[in-house]
Image (cartoon, rainbow, N blue to C red; front, side):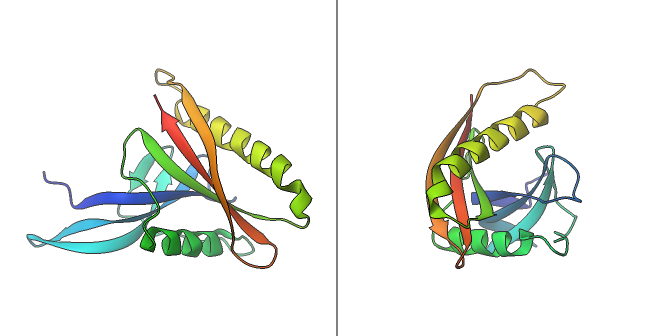
Length: 154
């Protein structure tokens, strides 16, 4: 069966509780097959333990910043951010930052969280090394910042 959606670039956003552990939103741009016509589209999908739940609509829990994070990821995908690689992905984490002097600590702690997340995804399979590299920080709102990380799976 032919692939319905051919992602060309994507950004992954970790989902907040009460979503299950290892849940992400995938904000992607690519081509979708609509009755034999390839249509350029952007779509947001739920990802559970590294597997896209193609037919499940995204859900944003109240009192979380998930919706803002996904909207910001959508803006970045529209600007050309993201990757379509199977061995590398771009992860966006939005955090409230009350003091910009905390950036280094936040960047390091978030990197560790992303590494741990990818180790959890790989439980039960042959573990492959994961390299997480801080890429950029961007202001979303006054005290909200987006931190971008490149995750390479070898």
